[in-house]
Length: 71
Image (cartoon, rainbow, N blue to C red; front, side):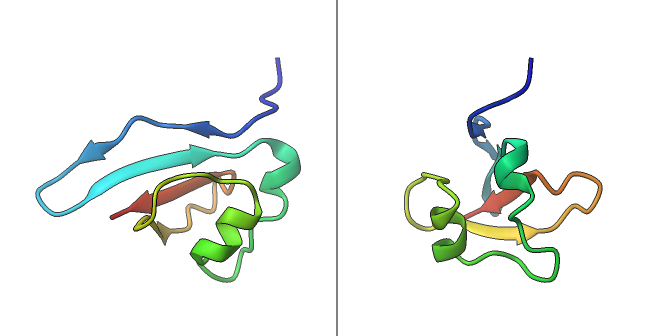
C-alpha cells in the first residue's frame, strides 16, 4: 500500500542534537531540491509541520524522500 501522507519519526538524540526524520509521499518527494538543503520556508511549503528550530542537515541521495532534521 503506497504512503499517501507525510510520516514523522520519533525524536532521537546524541550528546549534541535532537534528531528526527520525515518521510515524504512520492508526489512531494519529487519536489525536493537535489542541489541544496531546504530552508524552513521550503520544507513548510511542502507541508512538513514541526515546531520551530528544526534544520535540515543532510541530503541522502539514495533516499531523497527522507528528510533529515536536527536541532
